[in-house]
Image (cartoon, rainbow, N blue to C red; front, top):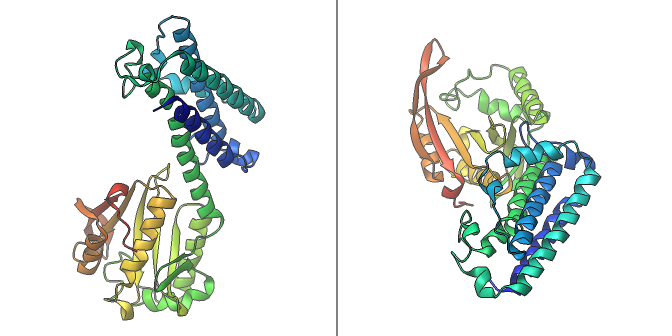
Length: 348
C-alpha cells in the first residue's frame, strides 16, 4: 500500500465510523445492547485507547527506541481498558476519541515522511512488528486504525439492526409473499392452521380447540416480541392479506449470534414452495441484517416435509438428543439441523 492510500484509508474509515455514531442519542451510545456486551461508548473508548497505544509505539520507533508491544499479546488489555474508561462521561470519551485519532494520524504522517514505502510494507523488516499478520509496519497501523474502525462499525451496525427489528416490525417481501406482523384480527386465519390435526402432527403441542387458544397464542407472540425474545412473521400472499402460515426466529443467545427457527403453513398451500420462499426471506434478513452467525432447527425426524425443506435451504443434520421432551405421554427425540452464515447463499 502506498503512503497516500494509507492516509486516505485511515481518514475514510474514521469518517465512516463517526457518521455511523453521530445520529445516535446519548442513551443509545451509553447503554449496552445486550447483557454482557459493551456499550457503543465503551467501544469508542476502546478504539481510542488502542490508537493511543499504537501512537506510543510509533513515537518510540521514530526516536530509535524499539517498541515492546506487550499489550498486543496481553489477553487482559481490553478488560483493563474497559475498566479504566467505563466511568468516563460520554463527552470525555468523545474528546478522547478525537484527540487520540489526531495524535495517531500525526505520527503516521511523520512515519510516512521518514520511511520509504518499501520499509512500510516489507515483511520481517522490523522485529517488533512480529505479532501482526504480515509482520510489517502497515499491518500494525491497519490493525489499530482503519481495520479496527471497520470491524467495530460492523458490530455497531449489527446492534442498530437488532434494536430496529424490535422497535419497528420489519415487513419482508418476496415475489409472491408479504411477511408481516401478526395482529389480533388474524386469529381466525391462524386458528384454521393450529386446529388442523394434520398440520400440527409434528408441532409438539396439542392442536387449538377454540379461538381463545389462538388469541392467547397471538398475545404471547406480542409479549415475546416486546420482551425482545422472539420475532414471528405472518405469511400472506401479496394478492390477499390473509395469514396462511407463520415463521419465526426465537431462542436467541445472549449476543444475538444464534437463533432457532419455527414455521407452519396452512395445508392448502403445501407443496407450492411457499415456506421455502418465506424461510429464504427471513434467513437472508437474519444473516445479512441481524448478523446472525448460526441458525438452528429442531424437528421430529419423521416429518419428511420439514426435513426436505431444511435440506433444500442448506441446513446440515447435526444429530439428535434422545427422549428430550415429553409429549402425549411419551418422551420424544429432538433432531437438530444447523446452518452457518457462510453456508447461506440466499435463495430468494
